[in-house]
Amino acid sequence: MKLQGKSVIVTGATSGMGKAIATRFIQEGAQVILNGRDESRGKSLEAELNQGGKKAVFVPGDVSSPDVNRQLVQAALDHFGQIDIISTNAGRLGLGSVTDLRVEDWNQTLATNLSSVYYLCHFAIPEMLKTEGGVILVNGSIAAFKSFPNHAAYNASKAGLVALVKEMALDYGPKIRVNAICPGPVDTPLIWDSAKAFENPDTIVQQTANSTLIKRLGTPEDIANLALFLVSEESSWMTGAAVTIDGGISVK
Ligand SMILES: NC(=O)c1ccc[n+]([C@@H]2O[C@H](COP(=O)([O-])OP(=O)(O)OC[C@H]3O[C@@H](n4cnc5c(N)ncnc54)[C@H](OP(=O)(O)O)[C@@H]3O)[C@@H](O)[C@H]2O)c1
Image 1 (cartoon, rainbow, N blue to C red):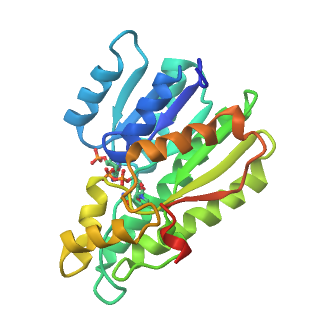
Image 2: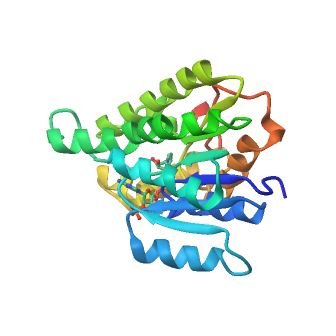
């Protein structure tokens, strides 16, 4: 029970990696505010995680809105009394090159992937500083370092996240540790959407899996295992890091 009694906010918890992370954290003793926009998936996950005790509270909303992030912080304070850990996972692709992308898509991708992390941290960090501190874990991507075609807004937002993580680590250490996970191809709905930027989506996902040195896509649980390490005391000397977890694909 590495997170016994810890109070956590997980965005993007209704699917994929965020869901696996929230589930893993609760198994390790945490209590979690779950966020996503899809109310039916959010409520059913909340019910599943609350079997055997109340550990999860679903707070629906679009994280591209500053107010929703304020509500997530307030919900954590109301239900659990403090905030110890933040795990941001909400993300969208907004496929397109700079010339193809509509201005609205650019803005929405930057707001969902990057500004949302600023909003949540803006409201949460003052509360975290009132206690003994805490940990912020941002879900980035290898797209921060290795560009994907037709992903202009996505690549830029993920590079921005890595810069923001390092900056917050500087400003809020030693009380608050801030790190990023930078996954490669993980088997979630998002990777299948991402593949639509290419001519043959099924083939490209299969080729991508084969291009990893481990010869498979990552699983959400692979990411949850790393997330648990990065928010637990076991990583207490790590901050400002962007940790790649990608089956070795970016070695090539
Ligand atoms: N899959 C990959 O290969 C891969 C690789 C590197 C990085 N990542 C990153 O990993 C993170 C998680 O993605 P995933 O692969 O697990 O995809 P996913 O299964 O599609 O999950 C995305 C999550 O983000 C939530 N979300 C999207 N827009 C939102 C918004 N505006 N407000 C609130 N929640 C929002 C979705 O919930 P609702 O639909 O309920 O809103 C969902 O829970 C993303 O940041 C993604 O960029 C993914």
